[in-house]
Image (spheres, helix red, strand yellow):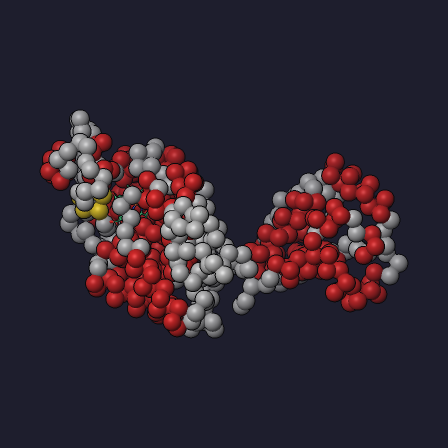
Length: 421
Ligand code: HEM
């Protein structure tokens, strides 16, 4: 299914109003109405179809203005949209959507636009079926080849999804480099330790040679994470596609959107909640820290000058050997693996480590002590299958956070730069 253009959606919007009993006349369109319902500007292209219906139903302009003012004062008294759909089209997919009562014409317009775009331009499974049938296969091939050459690429793809999607939108803004007036999100302190971006170029090149300008970088972020999870021992996740790429970076908002490892559990949970991820999902997603590494820069606060009492003393000794200085050189590659026993497997060892006080970051260890999260930690520690299921479920929610779809955004030619033509 292809998405409608904005113009088409605007005309649909007008037709929707007419279906609901609204009546318009070209001569009576005020500038205010045109700004609220821009599809009316293309009035001439569809008025022929509705000539008959409209005959003799022209409203007096002054009367309309008075009505509008009254409506704004007392709340819109027109038909309640969701009710209209339920009564007239019981088979419609809209039937289950309940819209809040709106108080002004502008709010009504926003709601209609929201419903229109979310229904016509949603992500979907196999979005590239017609336009690039081998897209998902190519990504999987590339991710697999890269994994066999550099195992930690699979780890990077999982972290990429979190950092891209939690900051406003799954829109590949993370991949933009500092150039052409853009400040890269990769330069933020929150992106410290992120790696392997150069191999995204490899994946994109393979796609561009098969289907130029067709597969978005945002979908590469999502699908590479999904394939990375499977390679590291996680489940095969069905993921929708159809994301577009942003034309801007959100570097200035990184600290606001990505939690700090020392944040309180309640603020971390509310961050996840704001993108639709519940507590169980948040606990599962942090299980991504079952793979990969943490640099000393992120560990020393728990080791020096005194060891954090919530850290197992034996593990603290090990970490001090890995990070001998309280003031590590950020450029030095000094780190500890997140999980010493199964460092390259996405499994529930992470939760077992937390229950033994061997969590690396403060946010990890808090999962085991906070009463809201600890029951899930215990359950995940004792049941790897349950952890993997919850992890997959939450990855899907994360991957669908506020995507750009339809004719907004673009398909970048090179994931590192906004298109320049
Ligand atoms: C409260 C939320 C989170 C915080 C504060 C956080 C913070 C961090 C930090 C500080 C590191 C170590 C960076 C380094 O020193 O190199 C890290 C690594 C990592 N994070 Fe998170 N993270 C969070 C959630 C997540 C989520 C939800 C995922 C994925 C679903 C994720 C995936 C990863 C991965 C895979 C690594 C290892 C990267 C590598 O080895 O290259 N993180 N995270």
